[in-house]
Length: 630
Ligand SMILES: Cc1ncc(C[n+]2csc(CCOP(=O)(O)OP(=O)(O)O)c2C)c(N)n1
Ligand SMILES: [Mg+2]
Image 1 (tube, rainbow, N blue to C red):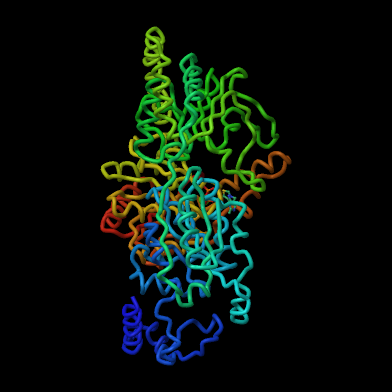
Image 2 (tube, helix red, strand yellow):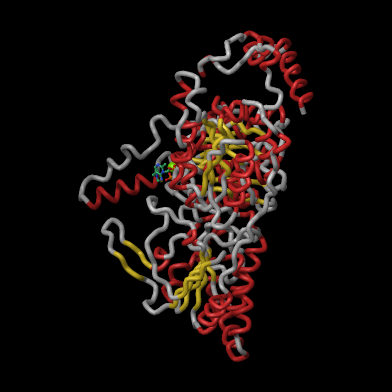
């Protein structure tokens, strides 16, 4: 170990002396004293270090061992001196592999990348954030991950010991309690003060982040602990990593639910954050088939194959309106499934029948915080079962099968014909609606969706991010990786980085990742384009460029109508025109292949095919399509 550490420093000295690149020149030229300001940079002339001051085995090397032991493959980060020692250990001691450092241009991008990655990879990514400023930038993306119940391992650099902090910047960037900034919307955090403490807390954090309901966690990396020698290393123990088995709901309660569902004439299943895998989808199909009951996939995850005759997401409201029993599976907003609220007059109306039996299988109540309102409005139900929805599906299906007697089985089977007809009608209606404005310029969103489908239909595909419903209604999607759900908290700025993160996870699985990028969304932090190009992350980005924060245009119009005032001012503060953003140039400037802006729908197909060829050779590509509305 000691030899390795010494060798890599010798290597650095050699590299600094010979490198012609700018970075090398700077390293070689620098002879800044140890106490320097952040603006002077961290480049230290190693030759000036007396030998007895060299730290051969810093604490951060052990921290890398711990991170490696969790199996985290990537650390997304914007660099910062509060974690410079861990950064150096990752790239030198750890060889920049498992974890590999991903250079991010905004902490919000780091976290949103980790968010998209976790849903596509089924495991978390690490994020390294720089003290106060890094965590503040990360906050909104952490909130999205929290609302979406997605695990992210956040490491926060900080120097706790005021006696050691360098004057100036370091004080601004340090904090007594780093995780406080995020505590209202993270699952757990800790501030380890020893390396053993670090090892145990990282393992605990990882385990908790992945125990449903999943969520982001924060571990502080103390700068002194990281930079100083790892003392008494022989005494340090690497805790074993164990995963918690998600809890199945109570068997008696599941049997009760099964009886209610079997007895119902018009049962409906609402599935939100249910499936974690292809198996989860299969289990939901088995339940739906055992009941011969339609499923509306709310879309928090990919739950139900869209080509199954029981997948009736497009008819959700009508189904709920007619249902006499509703089974909700990890539904984020149960109240919102039964009620409408008129906008802008805020009048509530229940469209579900008053006597419909309600069952909810959820772990929602086991992870709550008070301040942020992601719990949604309270909905009393007849049977609330605390349990993981996916883990409860097999037992529920068994209970349904044993509750169905011979006569009931025949009745349930009889529903099949009508359900198949209804499914065909729903599909036909979607196809009809999609043809409206087919030839319009700028391009209609339905045509864009259909054209993209033609481009990727022979690939293994993942539509990582999309604000439009067309893909779910028009595309046959049968695989768990096809859709990964939305942002959770609807914080704009999620789309582009989440798609990049998902594309990274899909890269080695031969899955082509695509995304519809909102123009407003991408402009929050377009630097993620550079990250995708730099790390060769193949992603086909299709700009849904409506030159507006279009949702907000509609809100302004609604308010003008409410106040009986002129509509034509609704574009003020809500449109992104004059000048129009040239997204193709923006992408090119960061090394991303691009084409556009395209306004003619007949030109979209060939542009997408060219972009797909780029993606298939392992690089990102962007096609800017000027679209109508949303
Ligand atoms: C961080 C954040 N700020 C503001 C909003 C309010 N908001 C909701 S939708 C939206 C417009 C997003 O624009 P774009 O990505 O272009 O999508 P479009 O509405 O045009 O389809 C905004 C600003 C938000 N949800 N999140
Ligand atoms: Mg827009």
